[in-house]
Amino acid sequence: GNSSRDAESHWIPPWASDPITGGHHAPSDCSPGKSVLILVPYRQREQHLAALLSYLHPILQRQQLCYSIVVGEQYGNATFNKAKLMNAAFLESVRQLRRFDCVVFHDVDLLPTNPFVPYNCPAYPRHISVSIDKFGYSLPYKQLVGGVLAMPVRHFLKVNGYSNLFWGWGGEDDDMEARIRSVGLLVTRPNPRLARYRMIRHQARKEILNEVRYKLLYLSSKRYRLDGLNSLSYSLVASESRPLYTHFLIDLGQPP
Ligand code: BGN
Image (cartoon, rainbow, N blue to C red; front, side, top):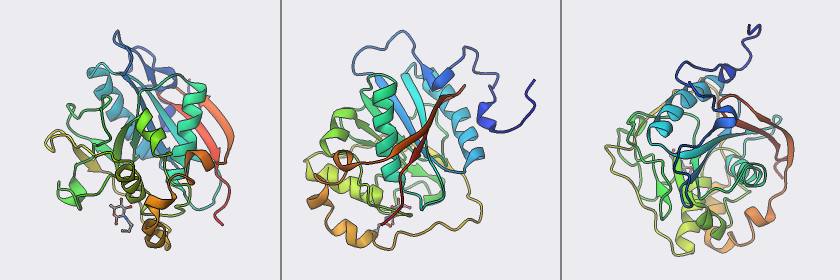
């Protein structure tokens, strides 16, 4: 049997009756417009990931969605750059897997607690994590798009993806909100009663704050055409189809 307990996420739980190797699931209706890429930016949160997968797969399958779960892991010990990591994992998913109609950027520490939370492809960018326990189940501010954000792929391409410049915690989601506004799109939200999440507590590990995030945010709407998918550089260290997800290990380089 399994000699090592290495990654809990390699374990196949009882509800995964038909194997979902690579994190792919395709019910009967995979018609155009309905193919969902769930993209989880990740580093060193093994338990969080195992919990998230055990919540997501049953919900997505019950909703009969055509989906793939991709985990993008930042290689090495450089400062975390979630937004650049999401850009890179998005491009690899599109290159290596198949056509997707929408992408759901999903924090690893947010567990959906209502099975009716809509994970299907939206017509417009949809901020999904509206009611989080940590924020008293209400939005901390109206412009927030962080946590769980779904976007039609064509809209993600239109805003040139995320910025690559946000090293450390904070602001990359606000920059995305500015991009969305800059191209004239509006953010929609589901009914808050459906979009409830529990945030998993983090160990007492200090996040490295992005000290220049305020400065970067002044120019988001001017910079988005030049900073994003079209200026992205990274190297793919490894890619693997695991029982519950596709894994991309990605070297983003060092902050300047
Ligand atoms: C905000 C952060 C977001 C984060 C939310 C919720 C910034 C930029 C300066 C205004 N934004 O304050 O990135 O998702 O809190 O935690 O720090």
